[in-house]
Length: 283
Image (cartoon, rainbow, N blue to C red; front, side):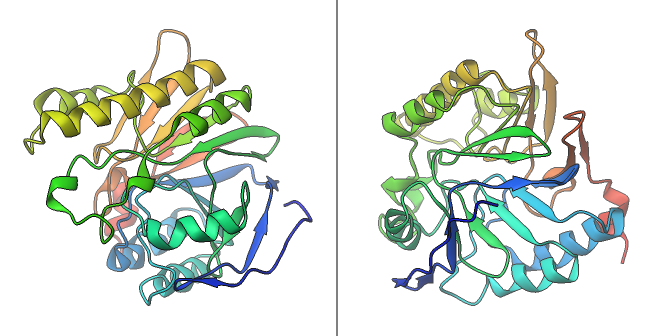
């Protein structure tokens, strides 16, 4: 981790403990976790299962819809169960369903910095580049809420969720990356995601789907420019893993309570292995 740190004040219920401009971590393997939606019960199930599978791992890369309110009580579950599992840090690539009314002011106070908001949770800016075991990782959070017609603006839906022109251009300017972490899916993604997009099982409006499509196009342009060997994303609530013709690999992670919600990423080989369901069911 870089030495540049600073103590920050409280913003509308969210305390920023410290900030950093990058990470340079030594781990050979890390966890990658999909949407959590602030589900403390799932954390209580998932993190012990991860520890049973491999008690040596110290870092979680979380790909959005983290959903824990770090001005509220639910976030304590993450700190408690992470500490019990030996997890030292959770690096969050923010999604669309986040407490943006609290996150945005805190991020604006530390522009371009990852901010630690609990014992283990770090919220990453958009974009953010860091290294693990010599590999370059690029995080670009954000996505479109296709269900915003069922939500209330300023309460559980925020315009801040969207990936902007400036974010897209800054991500591309960051250069080549070995691993791309996004919440939103790219256009070229797994068959399971393509099936969701084709069938629209929840009947979302054409307007909402159009905004979502434009966000996927942004992510695809970033992926094409940065050429990651592996691209991991959440948002679509299905698991999938597909090799592309150009040698890149795209992996979509499922949501909380489903077996495809987590897995390990080997930084030496860039191979991803889902957490076996047997470890989740074990008590």
